[in-house]
Amino acid sequence: MPGRQTSALVVASPHSGRLYSPEFFRLSRLGTNALRRSEDCFVDELFSDSPGLGSPLLCALIPRCFVDVNRGPNELDRKMFRGAFPGYTNTQSDKVLLGMGVIPRLAASGAEIYAQPLPISLARRRLLAHYFPYHKMLRRLLRETYEQFGYVMLLDCHSMPSPLFQGGSASTFDVVLGDRHGKSCSSFMVDEAEAILTEQGYTVGRNTPYAGGFITEYYGRPERGFNVLQIEISRALYMDEKNFCRGPGMSGVRANMSRLTEALGKIQLFAQAAE
Image (tube, rainbow, N blue to C red; front, side, top):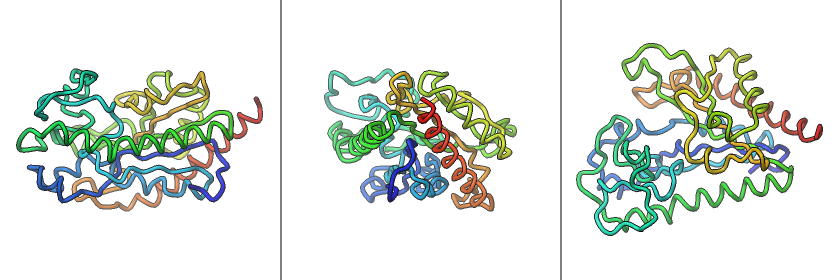
């Protein structure tokens, strides 16, 4: 939390967690590097100046491949659990069918994470211990910010692997902004974010290939004053993707993200005053 919250902007990093428990390693058939490919490495650090700029910063500490807080809590994969599923379980969502439910079955490489099916009770324990506390805090931050400013913007921060790292051609975008195709965030705010990033020298795309996940869809209600914008940053800009270490561009990208959050905070305050 900032010493005093002066901005209607809340910043969150749901996928940069890197605390791997011994229990998880015992259950997994994959090594550390294979699991870490699912991380949005160091995204929490890229936005770590946010509290000093008046905006709360929420970071998940658990790794995404352990529990993915950017999925619905009912998105459970029948292929990886044994036992009776609750009746409200969504076993046919697009993400579940891809092996990327709230408890992922597959790592980013496409490899199976677990050697054998897990008891469904384990999913329940992970959700209660990790998933719901994250969302409880996120809801609290959004609600308190809304009560203070009359509206709120959540910047949901992610990273994306560079196509070159995956064996493809160079990407056309350094940053992708996702607003669920106009459904989760005020267009004015998205336009301003794109303008700021473009001025910084980045190539910026919208909604392709990342339009936003569960958090963007669930919390984004711009007509009610709840704006959620997802940002995806190419990892090639700031890190060594192969060795999971910070690259020479780290300080520059962090400085630019600090300027982005500061500018968005001021834009919101100006917009609120104009209303």
